[in-house]
Length: 286
Image 1: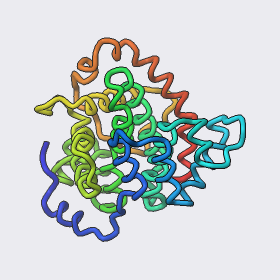
Image 2 (image 1 turned 180 degrees about the vertical axis):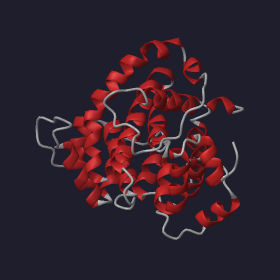
Image 3 (image 1 turned 30 degrees about the vertical axis):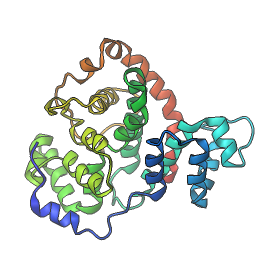
Image 4 (image 1 turned 90 degrees about the vertical axis):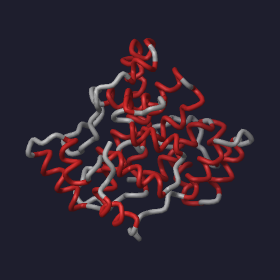
């Protein structure tokens, strides 16, 4: 994989308007790696941000989650929906809000719908192969194509050039190398570096489209490749007409995850579509 051109890296590093990764999301990512963390830890993190707490409770009471009794506080929300659901809810709210309203005609709703579908299916797949990495798989799937959105927001001229080359019939790979010197996945790596993402997650994002090239196998990269490959073929997730998505190279990723995944992928996709009915609730915050 070729590196991003030096001049683009320099311009990116000099960006003053690049958003900080949300503080509450950082705290949650740190907490999940601490064996002492609990639902109380998560509650305390959310309570530090009244607007975030309000949105969490608002979502809990939405039709998407079907809670029988009205939720009035975070402790009740955690008891009813569980730690993992509330954790993912907060990460979704924080990540999806970073680039809202700044995309100049780009179909951001379709972009995030596909990202949420990839994240949801990544978690379902990882539950089968490595339950301890489920939530990392979700986050890796959510931000797998974030380099593309970074181009749209911070390098609109380069995005237009990339789009034009692809619309003229050039391959995605050639267009990216012509415009960037590398891939949008590498550009995502620059973003994740700036946010100090853990190397395990960053590598999964950078290599998810071509995991066979990794010298050391990444279960997360294999999971995201398999999820994205399936999402590309699923009816019920908004398509790519208005959204470019980093194409996948042929890979043995799904085979490395085991025969059960290959056999169960259709069933897992159906579960993903059911879960997407809830996930779409987050699109109101884009």
